[in-house]
Length: 249
Image 1 (cartoon, one colour):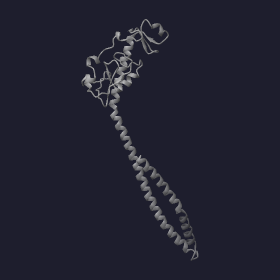
Image 2 (cartoon, one colour):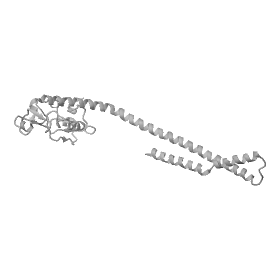
Image 3 (spheres, helix red, strand yellow):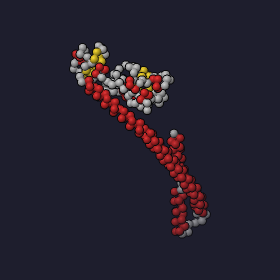
Image 4 (tube, one colour):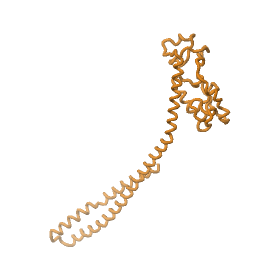
């Protein structure tokens, strides 16, 4: 990969569409859009981690090639040196960093930061920034590596849910078919029971067997109550309708 066409922060290959470059205000360094968000979240709010400029970055919107936009590799690898730490109010070399005010200070304005959380060892600031850079790059590589696997896992999970719902729909349809068969069978039984019950109105009950048959068929007639069967069928139809709505969603 040509370093002159990569992000100065994570060294990932730049692309005007998928990973657009952003030129920092220092006009020397280019970062990708993903890294700009990371840089803005650093403890010291330093927009350019290489030359410590704090002004807002300039988003590159022209359609030039990456090689025309990105500075040379030599400029990209510019190291932080002691002279890079500048006190903005006095434009002189800084002697410390104030965490509360998020600013470097020189010997002239040192008294303004008394009582604040300050760092006099500027090498420590550099060390923390470098550590954050390495940590972020490693996390970014890990995220990109697992992104495709995560997407595949989500897709498989959604497929499993759809298959599960379809299986439930098939079971409901089977239950409906069985219920319709029961209704049809019970209607036939009801007709037979009605005919048998009617026969008792034209002939007397002469023995215990006739009485037992009468009571048995009478109980079957009660159990075959059509309204209860229809109520069960409607409940299953309602469940099926809701399931179809879920599948369409």
